[in-house]
Amino acid sequence: MKSSVPTFPAAGIAFLRALKKNNNREWFTPRKDEFEEKVRQPMLSLVEAVHKEMLKFAPQYVGDPAKTIFRIYRDTRFSKDKTPYKTHIGSYMWRNDLDKNTGGGFYFAVSPDETVIAAGLYHPMPDQLRAVRAHIADRHAEFRKTFSGKKTVELFGGLRGEPMSRPPKGYGPDHPAIDLLRYREYVLYPELPKDLGVRADFVTDVVSRFKAATPFTEFLNAPLKRAGRKAVEENW
Image 1: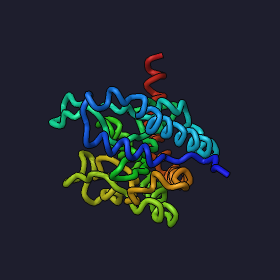
Image 2 (image 1 turned 90 degrees about the horizontal axis):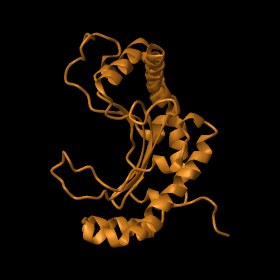
Image 3 (image 1 turned 90 degrees about the vertical axis):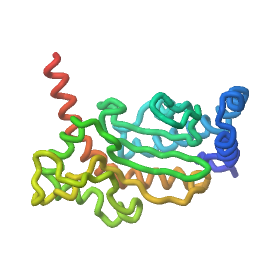
């Protein structure tokens, strides 16, 4: 009996591998339908399956599955790499009461070279980072618990992010959370087998990690939700 849980097909990986070797419009344009069939539609099915389970523990991050999937086209305006297409397919799920680029969320991606499952706040804007740091400074013990529990450590390893060499403005080196406040971003991002994305239990793996990372992501979004509500009230 065929499983009702979707998987990402080997044919999709093969297409992305071929795209990596032929990253140009002449190769891709006549194969758009093949991309849709072998890559984008399977990814859409994965997102739908993940969303179904997320309704049980993080319904506020569930929305239109199609809108979570990143476009295959690269933004090459400020990049030395002018190849026009991404060679992976990814989905980002953000909180419904925040804009897509305003807070933390959940991400997973599949490619021939790696499988990614991640959560948290990636490359925040300066005002967002200031708000999150202030929240962490006031409640750092609570924050540490969101990523240091046994289950979370087993599934993600530890907290990752780009640290500053010096304490950020407004915080002394003796602050009890200075190790956390130095971060420029806050993410949970484990090392995974590169073929995990095509395994039959991939959806289960994504869901279990997203569930474990929900308290972490919600903590990071708490001050950003307050800031959003304040902005609405001031502009009313």
